[in-house]
Image 1 (cartoon, each protein chain N blue to C red):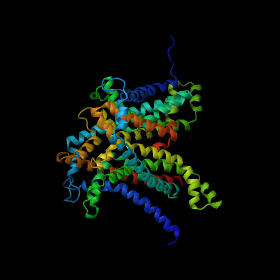
Image 2 (cartoon, rainbow over the protein chains, first blue to last red):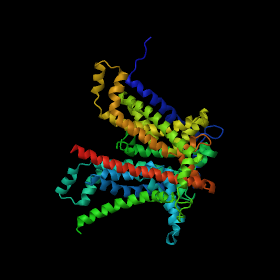
Image 3 (tube, rainbow over the protein chains, first blue to last red):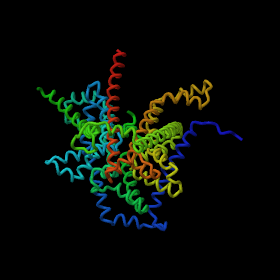
Length: 269
Length: 271
């Protein structure tokens, strides 16, 4: 009998098995529960119920709008910051970048708790009383606050790679600042925008911690739905999860995120 | 003032303003962590009470212990699994590599709630009790390991592949060649993967919520529950977490200052 020799390829096995058991099979379970009823018979009832219930539908629309607004605002803040830092000639620009990233080291629930206290304090002032009930505003603010580093990092890394001589060439060829931006900076930073947007859009549709802590329990997003059904009806919960899963896969496939891009979450910093 | 300086001031002002917004809530908690009471709004007197609570209250210490122990064990396991996995992926056939890379992306891009729900129903259906801590640890590994893989792979790509062959030619066993030739070259990726795994695990709320054994509280689960269903009793403990936030904040500031100083020294030395 031949003793199996150690080979570099066998190193693939443990992680492959792990992924199979804890990533692939759980996804299959979601699929299974989504299309069965409580007696474990195959059924489309969850599917029909999901798409015919107006409250569920409106929750999805709300979540989409919140996620969209959050993503746009985050991008509008992160893009100039990343651009200024990447183009800056300061020797210490890395330190400033770190300042944007470091709050992530404080537990995110604690940070959202801090933001909540800040909102409470501000809304005690007479002219800003309205803030106490501005639940959607506070939710979006909290999400932007939490996800900003995830947008800045990929933008910064892609912008840093843009060769300075391209800007000079563009200026030499007579382009003004605006044209240089639309024809050089924007197209070349597109990969960063893409990975930043995927890092922000999805969590802001599903991360109900922020909406719960800042929205006075008035803001329900799709993630909270799954949580509520987890206690009562797995089949319905799985159906919602499955819908989310399909949305995620479609958007990732469209933006080419399955290739294992290193810029995601700035892992190559 | 000419146009250029004005533009420079505007840029600095913008970056400064965003930083101020990022740090304002943390600073607020830092100030009130020295207050006698646990009410934010009016400063009622200086005291270290919350700091004393933080280091003496068995509840608080227990939660911090749980959080750290969970993060450390999840990070160590994820780093080992992810590093081995990345090595395996790097040397595998192209098709296997593409498949594993794609599957590796699933937990990264997937909504955390979907990952959590899928794991929870899987463990219940298979019959592994949450009380065994297996679902909790595995859950954290599922969210951490892909990031370890993603930070090790680029280092493998940068590596000179012929060094491994050279080690084999010189008589090293494949295992020894991996440990003494390949591993030292990818260590930076392994370390940053480990750090990333720790931060992800420390920050996690959703997966913990779905997979934790009953009564097991981390900082995240406790603060979330205390804030959303808050009552007078929990508020006392909550304010000792303000003290914790402050301590973490101070560590961050120190880190920035120190890395700033050592960076300058290195540059001067190289001159």
